[in-house]
Image 1: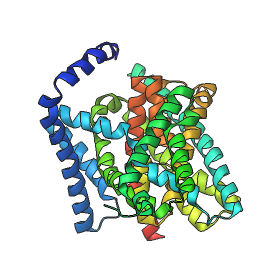
Image 2: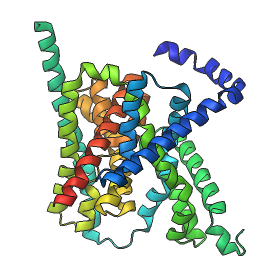
Image 3: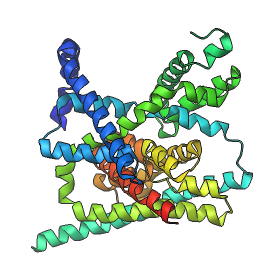
Length: 144
Length: 233
């Protein structure tokens, strides 16, 4: 990863110079995302699947990229921008948390405890499980 | 163009700049403070909520005016395919341990959450929203619509557990002797979603790659299973 980090500054410079030349790549990337999203929604609606169309679109795109062999640069860049802006995209929904007045006090206590302790307990269990499994895998590797 | 000041405040012409300004403020506050407790979404949503209260704008109006951001959530979920595809090679080597942990974690996170809430006597809407806890927000929103959970409650839970996991998760795992970067990344991806993935990227690129993978897979798995369970039950 070190070489990637070293070239980050020069990469940024090149990006500014080549913005116009790279525009078609970004538009193509955006079109791929929009098209796959649309295909996912269409698949969901026509087969009446219980899975959200966007998730189907994600799976379709992974499959498509595997067949294609690599990730087109424009698509990688436009996806990076969208994922960095995730917090902005769900800001309206998150703000709604301050406008919930239908919850009883007992609900708030339950919610708070479930979130804090539930998350920590789940993290501890997952970490210990994965650690055991990874160690066992390595032992089998050296045995073989 | 809206005619009155009140109509202008309830239009995208006001809501979108407000969202962007609040987001930039949230990012600035997060970088300034250097603590995951103030993840951009925390500062940004506080600022928006305060503005709406001060200017007496109704939340439904603001929500309607922010439609463009909602429209981009779907493509953002699809975009998760890119980190998934890019990390596939590293992941194959640890495929079995990761799959087992993923399935266990996807089941554990909501089960423990719902269990605790049930013990404390929380009501049905809260339990429904908690069941979507183990997935990143855009996927959780899509699922919430499917299982008819309250949208803002679902997002609030996802964001809040993300903050808790990103702040307390890494020290907890190191204390348990599971400080391997692959473990921290993968477990944060399952339990702390986008916020945990952002935190993992700060630890190392490898850590972030495992988090992005876990976040995408866990989201896909829950998205497939939860509506099926809700439809069956």
